[in-house]
Image (cartoon, rainbow, N blue to C red; front, side, top):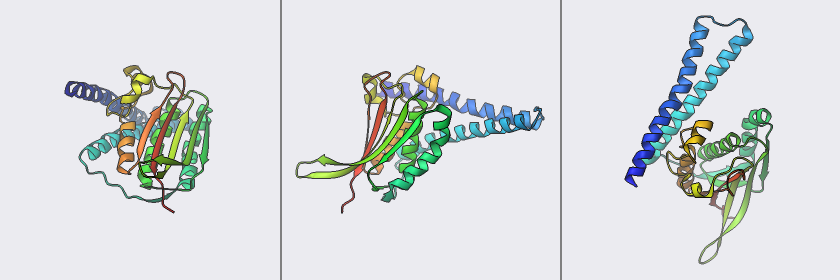
Length: 240
């Protein structure tokens, strides 16, 4: 296990170095072009600025992921649990992902059957942003279905209510033998997935840690390659 962890971290460091260098190189190259005036018109100028900005956002996301993992592992990540209104949150997510729905021609369907959940609003938003972003990344066509429902969780003495938020896509899916490790740090399904789609392999790990800090649980289900994926998170229900 120690050798496996060491190997995963080595692969992660190698991958992260590449992931960090790529947007940084793009930022520097486009800033140099801007500084030296290597553009013919305003449209080309705007394209250079847009590319540099997108690269900076990508770099910021990678650094944030690394810092989040370090903070969680050090036990310094805090949560503020309170009542979160789900409908306004889902409406905001729709607005944020509207460019992706247009660019990829993929429907984002929202089915919110629960009005409230007890969670940390900022961290819940971070988790859902990550999961939905993954769904868009790994879904070439079809739809992404986000649903919030009330369920009953069996216990020895009674049935405790829970709120389940699930994100189901029609994307590339995950092989069954890979699903048990998908939430482990530094892991993606395989190295070819990382090379093709990018990323550090920390997104779902951070989601799992944040959900558990909010007293919830996260799970992933896929019937296999080409069969789509469903990621579900559950939180204790709010007492009446």
